[in-house]
Image 1 (tube, rainbow, N blue to C red):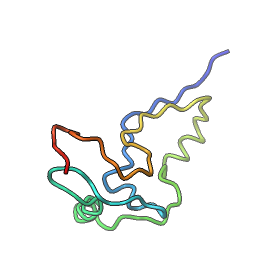
Image 2 (image 1 turned 90 degrees about the horizontal axis):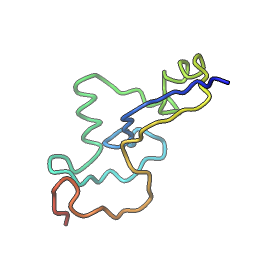
Image 3 (image 1 turned 90 degrees about the vertical axis):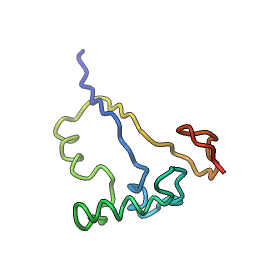
Image 4 (image 1 turned 135 degrees about the vertical axis):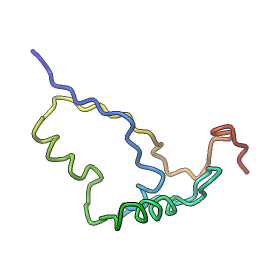
Length: 98
């Protein structure tokens, strides 16, 4: 019996996106240029206008398309970690972390 698969890549919920959620994570980043995830939100708002944060679901407009397709399975490449730990992996992106 045939199956319908939804394959989705490079979904990023960090770098500011998480700061728009009702339950956001700590904004501290370990990047060379930006140290606070809220700065990404500010930059995006400056470029594209006020960001709508009233949606309860990060999938937003994609939900209608998911309902239309109604796949048997959904595979998503999540480009961020899901953790409650405040510890960082040393040497990320060639940087020495303090």
